[in-house]
Length: 266
Image (cartoon, rainbow, N blue to C red; front, side):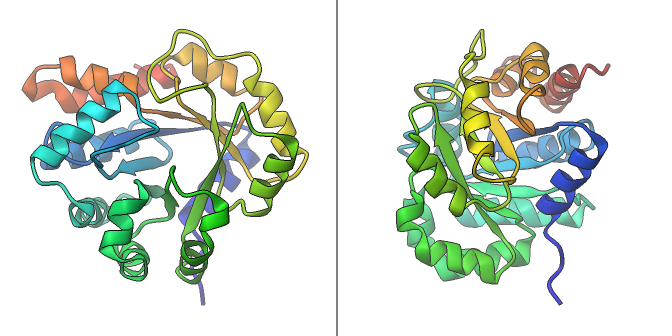
């Protein structure tokens, strides 16, 4: 019998409780592999509901300077797809039962082998796969493999998406729909665009699959605003900035403090 996907359980429970989810993002290997795993565990135990596990890539076209820098740093230290799968295994061995999503670009996954990737991801304990440079039209093989292994392939909508495009993406939606809230790459922003709520409303006309907003989210004020129309938020660059500026022995605590701040906790 197929075990229910952790992502489904978490998002369903959050909706039933009337609360939004928070998904931090880590790059495996930043600032180093052991510390990145420690950060992942700590933030999931202190306010993070789910986690994007970032696979470093040399040309991360959707990512702004901060995430690019963490990716370059990780690659310089030999981090690979296999390293990231090992990080997931470590988190599961430590008792982390939160949803874990592997986020990476298509080339490293293709080189690894899609069938091997999905099999190994399922064995490691991955719940979702996010591939920003693979549109649904080209995802037939990967979607089928994910479905066979109880993994969600997450697709994106953007402010430039037409209603026809949103309808098509919604028909392929699994787990949640990733709402790109800026015209551009990832990175902390001062304000959330007012038209993002309209975009989420357009998505909801076609599907009941949860919608989680990412790109540019950096503060509790952003989280509170997003809660009015979306199911959750993804945070990356602003947390990386906090980690980078913390002393070497305080980087895990810096990440925890940042996540607690987003949740309004101390």
